[in-house]
Amino acid sequence: MHPDFPLPDVDWPPTRELWAGAARGALRIPRCDRCGRGVWYPEPPCRWCGGATMTWHDVSGRGHLFSWSVVRHAWIPQVADRLPFVTGLVALVEDPAVHIVSYIVDCAPESLRCDQPVHAVFRPLRYPGVERTVMAPLFTPTR
Amino acid sequence: MPSATADWGFASALDDVAGAVAIVGIGDADYTRASGRTTTEIAAQATERALADAGLTAADVDGIMYVPFSGDQLTAGDFRAHFGTTHAMWESDRGGGMVWAGSAPYDAALAIRDGRATCVLNTFSVAWATQRAQMVGGPGQVHAEELFKRNLEIPFGWFPQPVYFATIARRHMHEFGTTPEQLGAIAVACRRHAQHTPSAVMRDRPLTLADYLASPLIADPFRKEDCCLISDGGAAYLMTSLERARDLRQPIIAVLGVGVGNSRTGAYWSQQEAFTSTPQVFAAPGAFAMAGVAPGDVDVLACYDPFTIVSLMQIEDMGFCPKGEGGPFVAGERLSFDTGSLPYNTHGGLLSHAYVLGIAHVVEIVRQLRGEAAAQVRGARIGVYGGYTGPQASTLILARQ
Image (cartoon, rainbow over all chains, first blue to last red; front, side, top):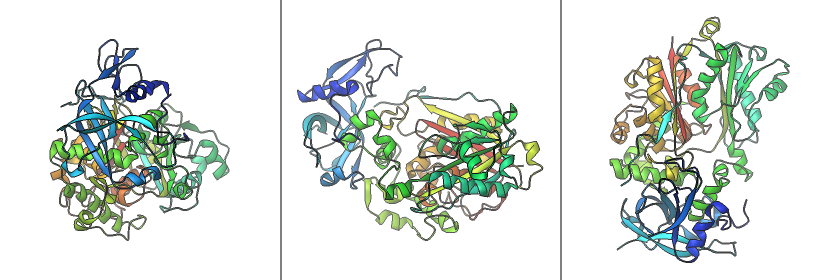
């Protein structure tokens, strides 16, 4: 297991661009060079047209809350101090088939509704016992 | 909002194997909490019991199926070492539990038809309770080691499986109006069936709908009772041609139909195009067509049920009710073995019997069709197993001849 678990490896080539973008406050996703659709997870071939290459682009960070769970049990000990938390899937406005998994923050969990507008905010992910932090796109309801 | 394209998955092309093979022996290992046993020991115990049930010896078995997943499964080498034989065996890694508990009879039928084997064993076992007690292994590990999940899901708390499926349940509730009471009806039916089943891990733990609704949310909208057990255990079944089965001691339980469905989006539930569906959409029609029966003909159903919502989705996707109407369909006592119109997971399923990933479901269906189940469905003649892994689903239709 990675020593910084549950933080991501920001140098892993397939997702390195996501973390590089987040470090400067931008949400980035790859699009297929052939059909232009989002390729998520970022792994060719394109699941829509089979295209072999993709290019990363900045997107708006706006999306809709596709679904979520309010987690009240620590299946891994590193999340115990953030219980309860909301984690879920955000459908991007540019390409709703791309579901970004993230924390939904700065909200009352009982106020959330499927498909409500949300937008990205950039915050450092911190976990106990891990010195490093990673700047990451989280999402919050758009008012 | 995004909706699933019609081509989010596909059915595997299968030959017609209706009536080509029968299940002639079944065996359960002991279903327990942490037991200290290895998976190979557990599978060997189930196999001994399946052989005794069929009235066969180890030397009669010339084919063996398992899945190279979750610990050491019973290989041909393990089988020969355990039973002290040296005979040649056809060996396949397309067996085991989950989706393969339903599709193994298809591969066995082809092997028997082609003369590669005459009597095929399928086994699956887990020691996850033991492994969890020792802080190694367990059902989350395979997900934690998958690199896209490691880098794009786990850092955001979307882990492990209860969180994935709670998220699916939330969306199902949004799209179709499914309620906690309806999910609870599935948990209550499975628990009641476990109370009738001496081997069930949860046989002494009654559960009412009020108990369910009063229990704490662990991954809202899920409660603990929406989630499967962690246990040790395993099961086995033996298959041979119908012709040979007629000479054996048990009633003939024939394979009438098999179907396999596949999701194009693979193993990432987060990116599943048809988020509130399973590949049963693609598996079930082929199986029913092969069998020449319809969902309305089914007397007893058992589906791989790691979470209540997976039961609900498969019941819809296999055609037992229209899509989205699973909630009202399962409410009340519809799933009960004695008072319901679709007796479901009559041994208690993964939720209340034991978490052995579907192989015990197939054993239970055989037991029902023989008329020897603990929570027996009166006069059951056609039984169905729905297998599921996420990216794949299988439908296995069995009938008493």
